[in-house]
Image 1: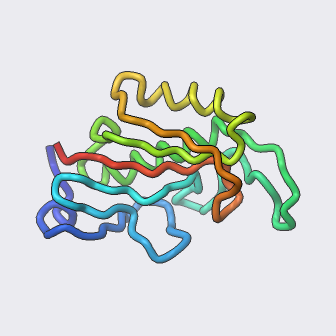
Image 2: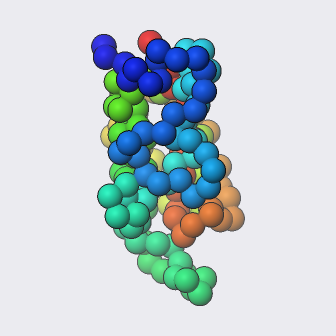
Length: 149
């Protein structure tokens, strides 16, 4: 399998994917430590136009809006997939996922169905946590650990 030279031919450290979503702060898409890749918390924002597929969960005044957790779940998983593919890897390299949902009661069942479409055969370890908010008006964020082999 082809590995991205910048990630695998250097010492441990940060990596920013060319086609990944933009960061909301001063952090890389991932950090390599030995044979493990620690992918920063990723949301569903489009890497192309920074829009939120399925819509934001609230407007600029904090007023709740209707949104589609299924679209956001597909998008966040595809963002992770894009970063891994740029490194010559895929979702099958994921060993652990931490999922943050801002509305566990409303969104868990639909998110879980979409999640299963991608991971029911891979079966990485998973933790799903209900939280009050995220730094932008998104409903879901994933924090991932992947392995090189």
